Image (cartoon, rainbow, N blue to C red; front, side):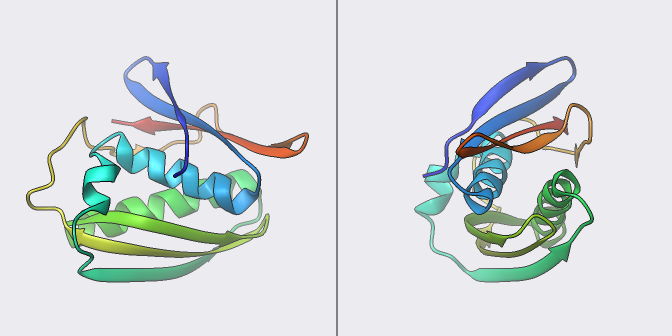
Length: 139
């Protein structure tokens, strides 16, 4: 299971995560983003009713993270779907994202909905042997 840490931030919320690979870091950031809004463990116990896959290219690694998270957020909102079981295969400029979905109806919210993924205080970098990232969300 991906791990992340919630950050206190005035009028917004954010997360930090650390992982062995860039792909795992991006998965942790995506998992954490949705876990702020609903319980991802509870959603994982619901049967998947759909799946999504997309590929995104970005000129910089931090932009890639924002683009991935923004697209997942868009898919969730536009499809009235809870995103679950996220898998990301990434390089520093491109990622293929695969995720299962289930209906959002009946999913208990634990926090305010995220309106947008921001560039404020954004960091995605290699830190020694690990990858580390921070993302702030507009709620």
